[in-house]
Length: 149
Image (cartoon, rainbow, N blue to C red):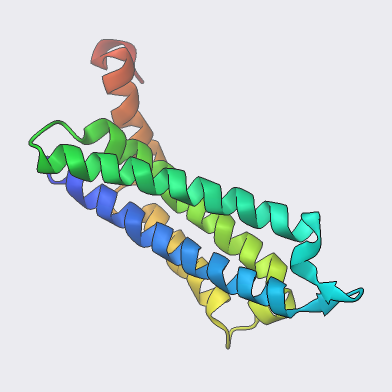
């Protein structure tokens, strides 16, 4: 059980890498794809969701880094690693989904990487404990075992 502090943070970083790669592809596509005389990245409805997901992934990365730092320092990493474990794969899945929407039919095709990334990141939501299991760990530390679910 003590290894979860490290492994869950590492799984988070895997999910963040998948989400970030999908966002990179979406940003590249948005700057190349033109509509109405310019790149679609100039439209707030295209740019702002990608900015939001980039922000959420960066914050999730910092939470995972905190967990790894605590584990490396010999401190208790359970809270930040379990917080990161339920949040980072969800944030990554949402980012991949937005990338898919940005690319449109190019993102949906089975021949492209976005659809595969969506499947991969869903698997990371399950790996090493579901969101419910990780939230339970945080709840027990937050409220105390006798007051938590």
